[in-house]
Image (cartoon, rainbow over all chains, first blue to last red; front, side, top):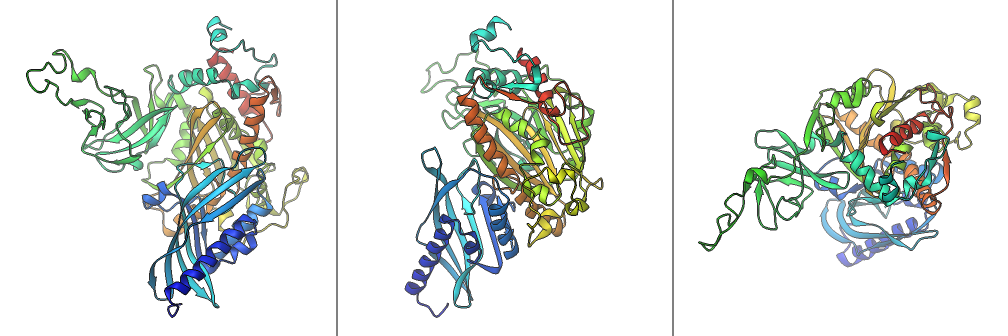
Length: 160
Length: 417
């Protein structure tokens, strides 16, 4: 990855982020799991908590096993109103490179359409990510989705 | 029914069968909502305000609410805690716009009136007029009479409570001996560690949220994640106990062997997922840190639900916003001396609850649905008969609605229905 020039890497990142958003739009959560490295940490965390440096996360996955469990629990056990979500991701920006790891940030915005209501903004915020290359593919080693919403609108079902 | 009630609200009559019936208009009438706030939140009750560890430093503050009113919890230079309204005594501007922070004093951004952390007015710019000899404030204006509105405050092992009313009985008496014992089980004097917040805005009346967490019957059916792992099942040992002043508690004995057991109870649970398993079982494998085998929850009416689900320690701060809108503020905490393993366990098990909780997300989903129906059919009547129409007694089974009935018995007395 360090051999790649910035333009090529940015293009790869853009594809990677858009594919991730596409997997969530389609609720292909098994595919969603595939975006993470084996030792990945995935957290969805309120800005209120993150800005104070506190450790709780609204969704807290330490390791790929917990990421798999999140996907399976949503699909197999959770009862919720049917919804259609769209994930809009701003162009990812490289913040720094450290050995085989790159730190990347990107804004996100998620809209939600329920059955008999107008679509609305469900959530917005930014990703604070660390990516590595595994077998020629990019993977998240750490993904923090820090949401700006002071309050989640009703419920957060699909991961961010 | 008094004529005052009839003039404020439509001519409401409670269904004849009493507390085992709930008329849907209690969830949608805006006049009733206002009267509830006056009766309960601004009346003779103790409201939860926050944890002492949320304002750990001297000269710090944090915003929260009692009812729909913005209040501040402060810690002064000497370390003492105060609760005051976040409303300048002059023109009503909020003093603190930040959600929390540190400051030298409380200064209103509008005209820079300053108050100390106890809410006493310290300074009024141009008090004697400017440029002199303009009159300024009247000579008999007394700073001592123009402070912030102060609430009576009580601290119990790191938890902070406040009340607007002089009539509220002492905290211990208000919550009663059994609730006090269960609060003290979790808030036992060990120093607390704040873990963080997850907040939700649920489009439902505040009472619907209270009732949902007083309803162990639904928990054994709707929440298949819990039942699948035997964490909260109808064949566990329960204590479901209504308490005076609108409080309640529920505890169950956690039995790890339940997961493998099939019985007449599991046959009734259509959603039980026999084959579902987890790759990381820490989420559903609590350790018995209180050495009593219990999963416990309790409500101190009208503001808080204290929960210990395994090793997740959380407060659910229930803040009414509008008739059909309620903020649910989840405050997660542990103890300052938790080792790394326990810290990790609390964070992992946090996935069970909150806005994205494997269990709790279903509650907010259901309540949003129920509110819509209640609003469109205010004259419809809900049936609360499980466990017996007139049964207000503690129950050793989860299959009961005794807590909801007890709540409406209390509610009708206080609201004059």
